Image (cartoon, rainbow, N blue to C red; front, top):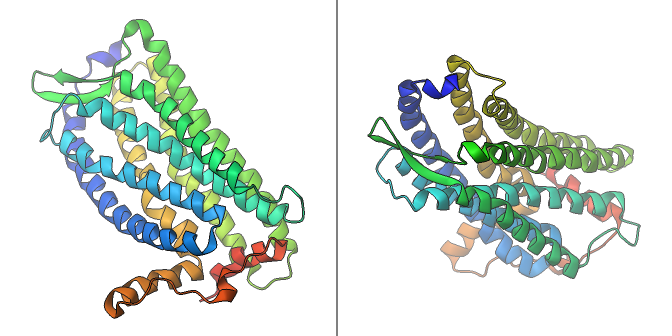
Length: 333
């Protein structure tokens, strides 16, 4: 193909400067937020034992392992580390945490939908056993989806000096590259996005009809969750589709190939920001999580017990209005 003869020295120079710097910032910011949220959740779940927080804990674990790959990617791109075994391992870990993170966000959307929209129904919430089963299915399914990335990834040299980590399906198996990208578009974006739109639109209807104060701000949070997911992931998935068109020969020009590679690096990096925003959007936006967060330094300096809750805070209720109040707790300063 014509784009295969392109020289992309400028692209390589750009990636060596932009990607390590960006990955470092995302790693540091995301690590702080997720470690703090992990500490809060470990203590919080012991008190409340709510499945929403268990989904959030697994999301934190997924984001944490994803963040751990970024320093290695930065070193790899900078050519400071060029271990052959590192290439497939990093790609498999990236795909594993890519899928699991998005699936856990979908699980939290479903849990919130059941609590608010179907609170009075016998199916208004999943049992702890079913929720744990869902968690296991998500992890196993994500592992299965990550296996091809580990198998079809290898290092290759360009101009006898630059070592790149890239997918290598071979000309005979190029169709599998397109198939896996289509699967990533569908399972990693389209289905989760449509599912979130359905769940949060129903939640928005309930909040609109609610007479509780602060429903407008809660609606803003609902729209923010859907909007942030779309803004962070849709550009990357559009570029993936265009890359698939390039692989099947629809897009052939050399300049288009260069532009697509630039777009892939920028949009993929943009999607990494979700690791930094998830703790804010799904936890620290709520007053109770912020209070628990402030108790961490208090416990350290005063050597007191973590998160001493009053009995009223640990009581549970399955009513719709309790779930709505939980959602509306973001309005309290």
